[in-house]
Length: 87
Image 1 (spheres, rainbow, N blue to C red):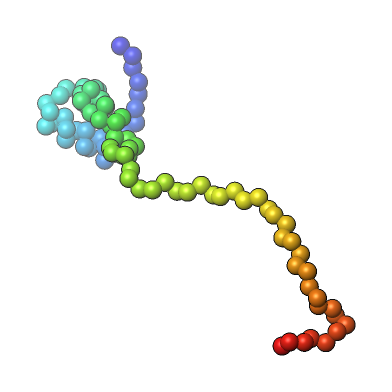
Image 2 (image 1 turned 90 degrees about the vertical axis):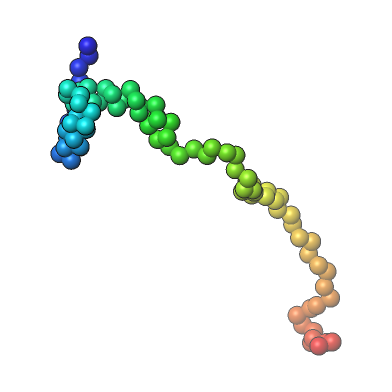
């Protein structure tokens, strides 16, 4: 049997000892084995929140790509040397 050593915080160790009294298991090793066997898959499946149903919200629109155009220079009859008329 492969062995591994783990370190538990004080509060976790206290909780483990409480669970040992309730479950009547013989050791913390047995308790951890039971927890992995019973709840490991649940932890794995629920670790990240995944939507159960497809989202019905509208997707964000992609930015529009515009090609720069050169504006035609309007022809004008304005000349700097002449007075403004028609105002």
